[in-house]
Image 1 (cartoon, one colour):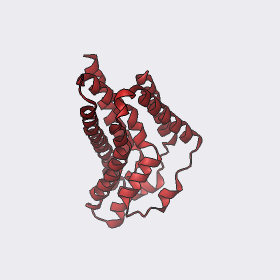
Image 2 (cartoon, one colour):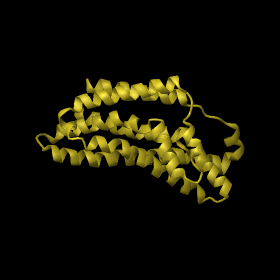
Image 3 (cartoon, one colour):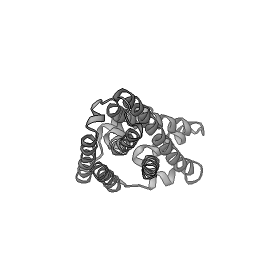
Image 4 (cartoon, helix red, strand yellow):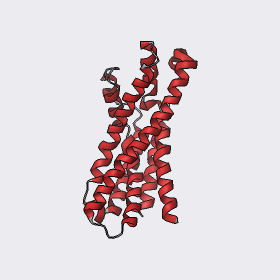
Length: 219
């Protein structure tokens, strides 16, 4: 019963983190609004959101898949979860100290939204935020698997990585899409150009919080 509650809580963490990424303008929904307004076509909005979602999904899988393919995950699962949690905490502290946004993102052409989304997610540690949650899910699934071979566990972890990345990206796209649609259809360009959302501190603190959760769950 307790394992079931833990699994549910971790999957909710995957979804909530996706919603949080979607609400964060740093993940790209203002670019989707701008693209639709510049092209003056309603169809440009979902197209831009799809490109952002694709790039974000690639970033999530690029971070999670190496962990799913590690044979040592079975034997050194606790140590890996602990290290991943400390890494996420370190990144959060770094972002608290260094508030400057990566300059290379400004060099990406506005038409390459998928590439921009991929690089933004990697640069801001969006994928790393999922690692402690993902490893926690794998640990609980390993407990349920009992005496299965390491190869079978790896296959299960690989599928879990794709499912986590998909669920997270879907939640992000829904949250960002709702905001983008509200601004595009009702609030307009004036609101977008005159309003600035600064969630840098919140983002850094959320990384530290997830890292602490990862360390705590590993211990």
